[in-house]
Length: 333
Image 1 (cartoon, rainbow, N blue to C red):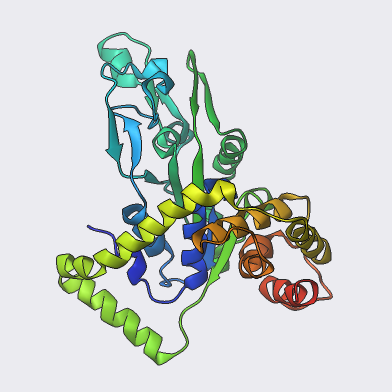
Image 2: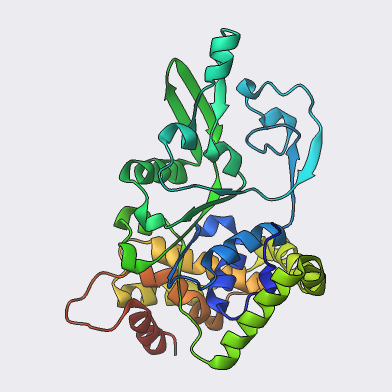
């Protein structure tokens, strides 16, 4: 079924902004979307696939290599034709086995032809794209550890069953979940660049508009998608433009000081908070056509970049979002 158009999603502006920023700069490190059931979390991620610009990749390459010389030897690519294909968005289901994630020995070729060949897994397919995990907080620990290693190195290494395989595995990790069903391991939580909290709309007009658009989409897919085509094209063009100008967006010493001061005031662990805050602010500046990161950009992205990096404070009953907002007002007035 054709995914629901990204630009037709009602509300949830922070979630949409976070996904757009990672499309502009994948180095931000992915998005974690936590919230109630039925708030459009998986809809937004799947809609992103149709929105994103296509990528150039060698035809038949299992890791979406952009050039023939980048294709791994084990792929045995006969033709070196570069084609345009949709940005990969790969689902990683709960209960998936390690072999399915990393790849393993191709049993069929081993049995029928006596050849030892590699069958690539989900990480190969997700290279240069997105890896989406629904209910990420319920993912098994050994798969979490595996993803942490690959996300850190950008490379998938398979050493078993007589195989010794390496291939690039650089992807944007997107996870969604319901906090009522369990918390996320701190090690994986810290790997997400941005964290977003989504809630059901509280006003009746917004809920009516959600129902109206969803009903129109279900009644006539083609007509509804056509009505959103211009908005989708404009947003895709804005993402491409932001990507092109991103390297030239400056960050002054004042902006760097603001990043460090805010993270210090919040007591964020490590320096990943400052780095993510700066990258997200620079991507937002590029999207808005600004030549330099401003305090307004930092204020906008601070909740997404920092709310999941705070230490628990038993003396402070305010939630992480409220704590970030309070410090933003004090440090970045």
